[in-house]
Length: 80
Image 1: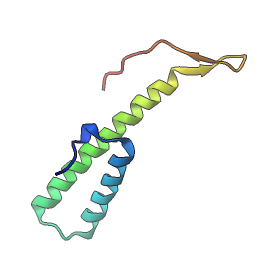
Image 2: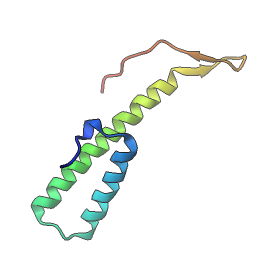
Image 3: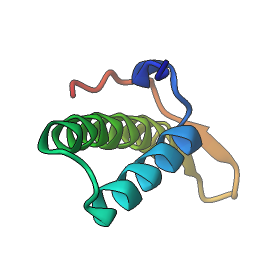
């Protein structure tokens, strides 16, 4: 059984997405199978994008000051 995408780590999602791209590239699937894999691939891509956006937000909240120390700004919520 396929793992729920929302529970997958970034690296796991990327690995599965790479496999999907490879299988789709072979062209040995029925239209239904290809459509299902393509759809899962889109969900995996969106999941990876969300993870990267969350990390980018966290990193944007950390900024070095003139003394080289790190300031952490107030946490903001991002609407995706």
